[in-house]
Image (cartoon, rainbow, N blue to C red; front, side, top):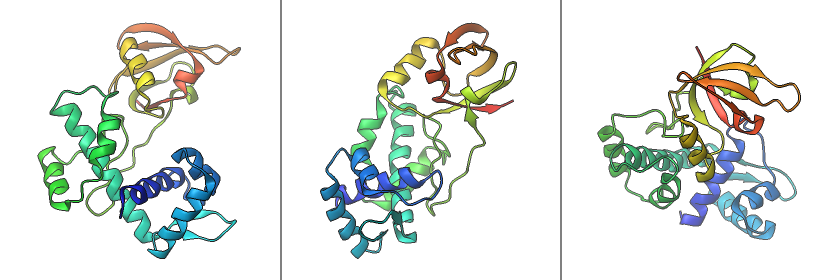
Length: 217
């Protein structure tokens, strides 16, 4: 596969990962930041390779071959993110763009050795699950901080928004994976919340709370 084909597969995978539903060419075009006509051309190529199910004017979904191929791309991306953070001391807001380049390395042997070298991690630095060599994923029970009610407590296990700006904001607030978060109160007006993070109290907007995944404790 070309780099472009791999990027399309990964985008379709992310768009369908939560509910396995078919996606439109317009949704893919928006994620890929390209024209719908370009998406259509690529989908025809991927369909010929038995990687997507595609019919004109209908939704698009990954075939079983396509799902496995997409998971292997995601696997490489997330393993490289772990490597960059744990072994090269990059911060979690720096690694995405670098991993976007490294995910196209073809050597399966290299990736499997990287996996073993890192201790076979099941999550990347943002809390997203890493598929194993067979495409299996260990699912994490989690919910958004905005969904908690007053006096509930959770541990931060991931972020919905992986943009550099959001991750830098969390760093400033001292919020990271593993942080214990107590929800103290929620404003009915704008749904902003007052929380305690590892003993420190602060107020955050609903937008921030809606981008933080926690596991109840």
